[in-house]
Length: 398
Ligand code: ADP
Ligand code: MG
Image (tube, rainbow, N blue to C red; front, side, top):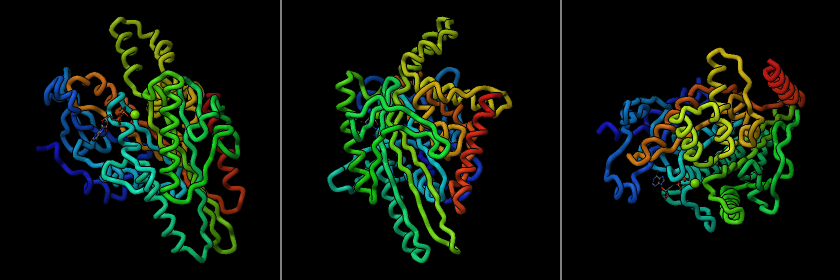
């Protein structure tokens, strides 16, 4: 039927895919699970109308438009081709890039970002997710560029880090003995996490090793701290630096790539719904904040950014949570950002699915301002960062 439109040709070959909007929002519908089928049969709460539109079939019926709606027939590989490839190309061009997976627990966030990975061989199967594919492609592009630009002495350095935010504390997933790390801001370095382990990687296999190690540590930490990992956010970051010589000048370019697996959105939504039905919405922020400050602040940051783009002057509370402070550039800042909002199509998840579609709809209106992080004379980059810093301060004062 209409739901089987194959989006891969419509978008991947369109060079303007990224040009105008620096925030891309993709909906990913996972297949019905066996337990959902046994509870509700094949009854679904959404239907895909085209490769960009989806209808929530509750009351009232609501239709949403996104950059892409990927149904259960869209494979890991196709999703990567439609989003990950452009993201890597942007990083190679010196743009900061960020991908978020949003959605309720069980909707497919980790399947999307990580999928099935095999740390032993570094080779991947059909269920391998976004992150390993991104790095395989990144290193193949690096290799090709280096060969093509040998006379420019092109060099790349890639450094990875992997952290978790749980209960507003930052844990180093590559060194789990390192807990409660602090975020710092510096005019030269931008926003960074003090004392976070950085591992230099030279091939996809190195990255997969770190991913496997970090994911294992994440599970152990969750057990030790007595929480489900569905309540924590994980952030995998790679800083890609390149250097080359042209006409006697050394050029320097860098880009930051963030891959984020967010905490499940359901607990926050439950609080919001309860308060809405009891009319106690004023209390919303306080209680929701206690549930997961980073997730509730993310929602608020997005809401304010949208209102600002509609002409209102508002304060954006980036600093109110660890997640938004760390990723402020990816939200209304210097970054190209992709949000993958994962949903279950089952009728049992209708309310959560609607909340996710609404969140994703709001995120669609964020306007980022991405610039190439390049420095030819040695001073331009520092000046740019200073300008950015000043702009931020000015907007804070407003
Ligand atoms: P989350 O990280 O959002 O809690 P998971 O990624 O763990 O959810 O997904 C829950 C279950 O659904 C897993 O067993 C996963 O393999 C399966 N799943 C999720 N998305 C898909 C998909 N697109 N295709 C097939 N299986 C999926
Ligand atoms: Mg998960």
